[in-house]
Image 1 (cartoon, rainbow over the protein chains, first blue to last red):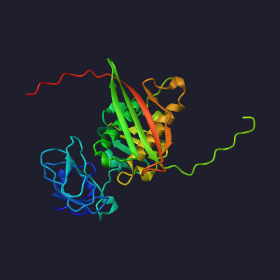
Image 2 (image 1 turned 120 degrees about the vertical axis):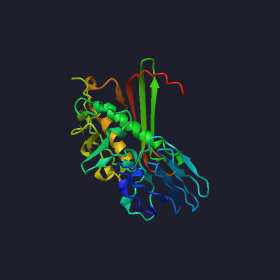
Image 3 (image 1 turned 180 degrees about the horizontal axis):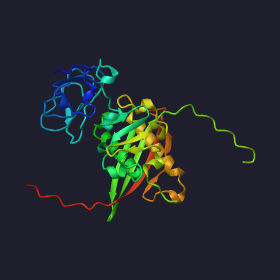
Image 4 (image 1 turned 180 degrees about the vertical axis):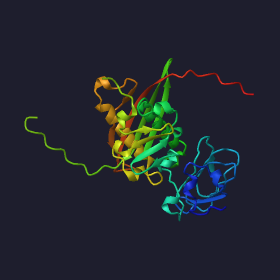
Length: 212
Length: 111
């Protein structure tokens, strides 16, 4: 089976591994230009992350057989390649295909690229507990659980996702930081996230009342 | 009163079936359906909504009801005046979690 431009089925991403669909060839274009990458996906490669970003016609990637998952990226036009293997990337993430319908690819900022089993029904978002680092079923319970544990797991998972990428392709509008500081009998987790946001037209504040 | 850690205290109508957690977007500050879409949405917006909601919830609690093992600082907002992001604003949230210490085990010797 040959997956060419823009024909990566979304079903591959939705809770399944690429192995289930046994694709053999991928070709993707960077959102930044006409660069093309193509990789051979072996049966043993269940999942991988596939990323190209630079303009230029000569970049290529090959997905190797043994590692269970991949982060695969090219940073420069020409033959230079960069690849890194990650242990837990159970999903395929592909940057925009040049001719793909919008719903046939998943972007790096799509919620499902962070939380692989993420679902949204128009009213509520749903995330598998298994996608949240360190969260237990007991901690997630609506009545007896603890929202601090859930929130911490969400912060940690999104931070971990962010730092899988080379700095050059990390979102510049989201800077997460998460650090555990260990003491003799406890630890402290410190999380700081910087968002870059657009603001609406600022309104002039109301004048103070007389006598205030 | 005392601190209520139940997830429904911060996200009304939150549920968990033991496999997934489910949060209505109505419980998340400012999050739209478009932003929450699984494949065309934006996880950064989800995280911003989660952080905003967490801070608001924490700051709204009376002092006696606040947790001792979690704290949220008032977000800071500063304009970005140069570079490609000029004209935008940087909002920074900070949270501190105090954890139980997990005693590490010495790893098995390599075979």
